[in-house]
Length: 356
Image (cartoon, rainbow, N blue to C red; front, side, top):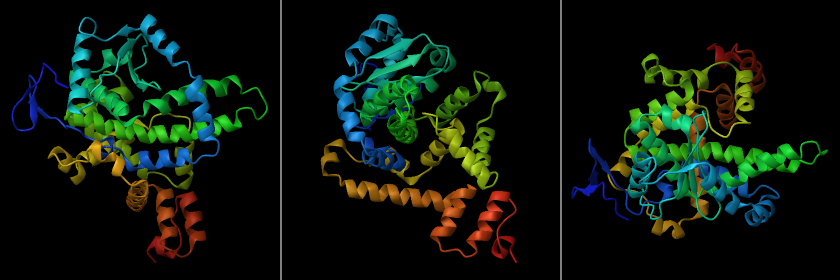
């Protein structure tokens, strides 16, 4: 696929009006997928009843109706409508080497949001609230984020999540009628929150401007008052959120995030910055990344092992009180009763915790 707006400089990079950005021919979604995304999807597929529900809904969901709805009641992005978004979309597909450009629609909604849905073929939808909130480079990262969802095949599960969420509300009055549905919805939400971290990385690969990605997340959190906000202070919030409080706060964090489809914006910003500073990202930018023609040779066991290893590293490095306790238990720390009491009250554990 070629894009008339971009010329090859001969060094593996394409020129844009203001700067150069690298393209990633044949890139596999494995290159940017967060390990938790892959492991959560494995866990989701193992959920009792998921395969049955998935196969049934794949045949029942009114995808043609969904496409007709957006065609009739939203504005389709093209050279004639929202041309700047169309350029960004083609550019994002060019950089991530997604051959077929998915249809993109702008829908009237003051709430800033974007999504990639569809079972047979992905559709990208952005709201007017998002278009009006973000500048060009921030929006480029968002479009790249959604193209990342498309390349990873996330749109199928996102569509089922939307459908099941609505269905759960409709059958909530039936005794136990939505228990099984809500179990699958909860698992889908857990996976989708992790998939957002993957798509944030794809957005950075497309925009190749970490500050623009950070600004976009700040604006989604705090609105169009950039002069009143600061990226470093915003990231400090993420650190305070992770490290603050005791075990009671850790439990509350879990309860707060369960109903959400997206991770908290400060957490997303911190995760993306950490990845942007990693060796994996630098190698990717240097042209060393897995290709999709190698996907068929990828071992599911190896992928799960990598995910488990990443989770273990996260637990060991986490400042969250609950994660610290998990690390202590895994390490065979003594006086767990004292640690539990101390972590729940925020007063420290046994003698080892107090430095005695």
